[in-house]
Image (tube, rainbow, N blue to C red; front, side, top):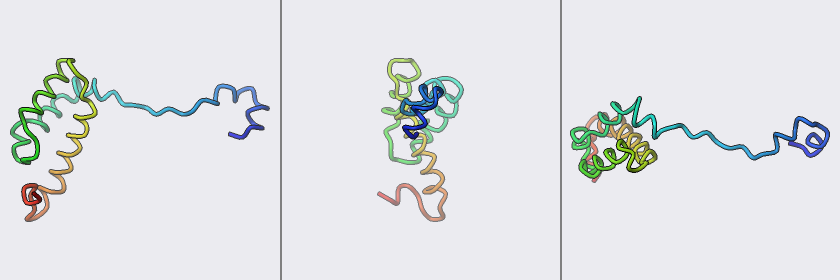
Length: 102
């Protein structure tokens, strides 16, 4: 915003703050509306296919998050993105599996 506009316009007084981003309520979504998707996508059976994550450690994270003992929304989001990417691009590629990368 130009300084001239700020000085000459009384409406500009409220527009001088820096912009702030919007954080979606992942924590609530993962505990409520999206919980079935989270449980299914990050289930021990689903993770056993990938061989990347320890299902019992991930189960502990989910249990703590769902019981409100901790907020792991960012970690759960990252895991969901990774597992979805892995399924889409590694497991679905012809002749390519996640295990062949290790």
